[in-house]
Length: 273
Image (cartoon, rainbow, N blue to C red; front, side):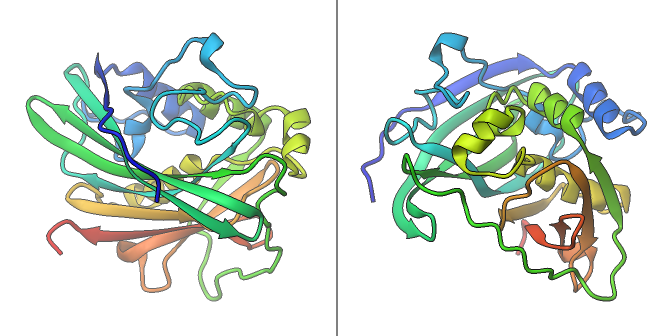
């Protein structure tokens, strides 16, 4: 395990309505009618907007929180945990503070990996409203792409409860809304450089869609922990399918490719547990 630092980064802003309206447009749904940001849509706010000169060749910042553990390391989102105590209020200032809580070296099927856990805490009106941890994985330069398991494990006996048609335009718009310049989501030349067959669908988009399935079915994530893992890359524009967990939507959901391969798994648990 690598040594950790006490470095923290904070960002403050008034929570505006426009990002929420923009996400509703991206998802082709009606905008929320209240003054609260839907659960998990906080990923549109309090973003680290770095100058272009501070971006690496892959589009990610070369310093900050988290900083790549070495030159040329390839970054992927592995998962995370979101504790929603309250939904963000539109029109009220909020502050997000971020810091690294863990760094671990592992050996994966694609070569050496560095896992970095970043904690974010969002405070609004003096109250902690959202606390989350994000797990980022860095691959060594020159390693193969993360392995895509082509096994069809489509859920049996469950209908796809939510489908989102993902094309190049949607990937571009989601990158823009989240200020994510990682080139694997829009640059096919770079995708080939990293060893993938096509554009990579964002992990946070898949996680957000699991939250959307719960929200649209009347299951609130406020007062709950939503934990999610990206289990396999989703590659190429396609309809993505979101299913309830085998034990029911109140326990979680999963995302599958158009061909039925699981790519993300989410679980829901009470913060009182």
